[in-house]
Image (tube, rainbow, N blue to C red; front, side, top):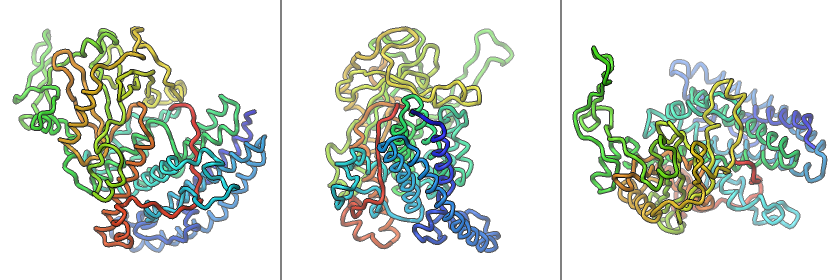
Length: 557
């Protein structure tokens, strides 16, 4: 049975371990402060006149912190031992022992990457080709699959990239940090009510989110699941998955954001300019790609029919004349979709995500499988009654091959801010919606018309407009007057909780990270550049059993 005393011990263990984050792992690697490590990053962000004076203080404090935390690490291991011993079955003890090992592997791998270690040579969370029958290999532990190990390495590498990219120019905003502040201001971990943009205020807060908040949030949610199921072993498995191989939409979205930022910063690919909505419309017009038509004029005046004295008047300058506004006629849903929605529902679109291998080097593309541009997923966003846009919607998964609409869900619990919402918001939502909640019309089981044509439209657009961008999210509208058109493109794209082939997806993401790493090494002339070039960045690290990457199935978030 579930025991809060055990939960308290586990929380204390995670809290202590989380606080060690960077410092305690320096003892494991023997790394000294450098330009690529945490202390070097701290010094690099100090004003020039303070740098020299602060260097000795920072370095001294750094090593003092390492020494203190070596002792704390031993205490943490002791607390972890109590959790393992107090588990009520041998299976539960094994699960919690694996959970503690996973927590250690999380920090050790993060430190390896933050200190400058390469993804290509990462020794952690690799398949152990030499493990004997007594080892926890993939046969003895089904959670140790090669695909999950790849996801774990890729996930942790992308988290470690945050500190490198923080001040780098971003294709959409001034820097990666600024983009995080702007795009996370309406998002909160369910049950907290705190906008995640607070962790974008400074790079140190972002590090705290990775090192402390993330493990604790994983632990709390794992016990939330365990409380519902009364399963200590299940809590341990859930914690391991949430920490190392998360399956929630938010983690996939942020991974896509980090890949896009990293790829844009290194390649300077012109395709990222299409994130600007007017540039996108112009490029589509030039390439003959169907889009929602817009008015080309100097601007428009909008005024209320019964106001006077200039009180009800608004003026908008058109982007086509150098202004800020794209002026378009309001368009309606096609009859096939309108029949599924309330009468006052907004334009309800499909989000189709496509993936391209054309941005990989020729060497790396040899390891890619399938077509060079493929549709990964599709979601139908069924807008709510009275909403202005389909951002307020039920997100129905759509079979990207056949167009069959599956059950729907929502991510609204991730957008609840403030204490009142934190106390009343459910933490999870399942794919259990079959009918539109506002009008009762059945949606699950319906087939989206001409799915093959929609796939061809987005894949052709990806090839014509931005072929070297890895992942693109297309907002596709089925309209009453204009047929199927594209509304805009999203390069830090969200799957909107649609299903997709995760094995293919993580293989692609890893290939891009490896290829970008090779490009950086060649540009810097650093060690390993030649060997990496020979493999196209796709070579694997020597097999090692230094990490464990489980992937238990938990409740959908």
